[in-house]
Image (tube, rainbow, N blue to C red):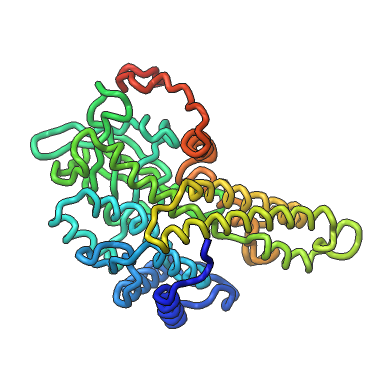
Length: 410
């Protein structure tokens, strides 16, 4: 593996560093994050202004084709910018799903006119997209979804429900996977559309999370009409289109925002231990830190393999699939131990009163969701077992059965 930037990569990194220094604050330079300091409306305005600045300075759509407003650069440059941006409190969150998952799907399958209409506004931060896949009875088994679309002239009429849709309450557009043929096996009767989230019949209901936020939503479709021209990939090809989106999603959620072994060890230096001294001096705790360090360094080296492949213009290997399993579980483990060490103070989540402004409590509640988003631990373990280790696949008795004939509780 080669850990060093090429001259071209080093120059790009310097440009990225200069841009970020001019448009964002380094993490930790403020007592509160930008999102906590601003109202929801103010934060969204800041996010759109930041995304516009990225587009104007050549840091939006880094790997996208130039004809779509991108930079046409190799994926390694997107990795480099992501590394540098992670050091800053940059308001990029509202655009992660749209630019990381939805719009690349539109680029891959939409018409030239549709790409001309939608890609530019998304890159410039003028429009936000969401992804409408999961359902109450079809989470990790996306192909088991029941939301259906029926053809009516030049339109399709959609009825059903989606759940856990991040950002639906502020999104302008979305991509939605629906069932258009129940006479075929579950993977073969699906179709994908892109849809105006302000269409009549769409009801977005935020879900109150245990963290106090409401970033996820239920989305109900009641006789929602979508033009046939907005189908992506053709009728019945929705699963193939969805795979493009899902692979982008798993890359996008492969990292875990939150404290790692460095943060908890620094914090432990100020916490009293059980046998006198500080928690950082406790041998059992130090063993845990060593375990976290080994896992984190192992994952970092695996990422270096991916970066090396990207730098050489190659396709990364399957090692990139392990990222989310490692980071999500490690985040949950670290934050759990921190909360246990706080004793009864560990139950306080109010950032004004909780130790370290509640960073461990907030991250602990997020970690549980991270183990589900972008493919559950169980799904990803199956992928690793079957496609990387070559183990026999699970028995899938529903593989060739028409969806309408599958047993259902409804």
